[in-house]
Image (cartoon, rainbow, N blue to C red):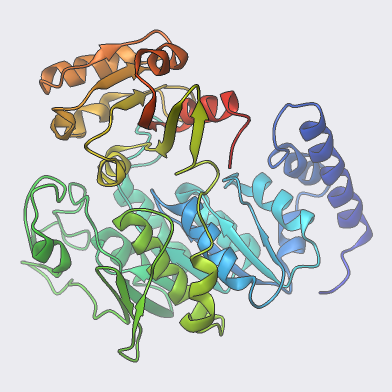
Length: 424
């Protein structure tokens, strides 16, 4: 990589120092403050740090952090990789990530959906990975059709190679202006935000039916074809296909995933990661062993122990995320649900009414978090018996020793992680 200009070197060094001090004083992991300091001293620092790297941007409503981790693990087969491993997915976090690995020839950056156009323009990344779009943080994020439209405009006329999930109509529409697209049939369980054509507004004819995929058979879930009834917009022919536990590559060869990460969503994340890796010259035979070493991602899927209780931590931030968390949760186990509504979560909890909680009937359910009353009302309407708890500690103490699943939204999840020493 070329030498940074002196001003950028100084800004980068001071940013790393600020990040180190943040970690040393227990104020955070330093992934944001370091970037902010660097950008104050050199506003063009991100562009300078991104230059001469093979850079991948990863964006979606759900699965960004996990897919970023999987791609990073695969690319480490080729060399050092700079990445924002803890999900600081705005420009300050990107600066911190690249500055902390300034000699790495590869970079994999998770990018907030709203910031993707800006970050793509600044970094001129060669690869953009797009996976899904669904309702999320209604008080902060733009309406998702507007986000898809911003993606279209950002990609038009750029040489970036896009890896996109063709089973999501909004993602397909957002990616379709790119100069080159590799389509991955990664599936779409949550469909409630894509029944209408984003091109003309007409109805989409879709294989399968049901509320977000919850009533679909396995065969219907596998058939994800869709087409507009009133215009020519339709699902592209995929280059890569997720088929149950296997991924089929563009040559028709099957690769068994055998991941340690659970659930259909993570198999979808891995399918996308394999497509990205091959775009950078790494074939599935070399990438897969590295994907299989990933056991948790920033605390997600981690199992922690407390007084004979084994708690598995699951993150769910929006209706689509809760649907995937239910897919992973063990129906035989008691479950603790925790919901906050702080800034990073979005302060509007009306999305709780879009989640079908009836799947929780028949198991012990404990409810906690700052907005536990909002969630309690939703469960009462869904006729799901529950016990209201003032704190997470109280919820844990109520349950007998044994295995317990925990589902929490973002800040609630981070608070629980902090109680266990931020296990990763």
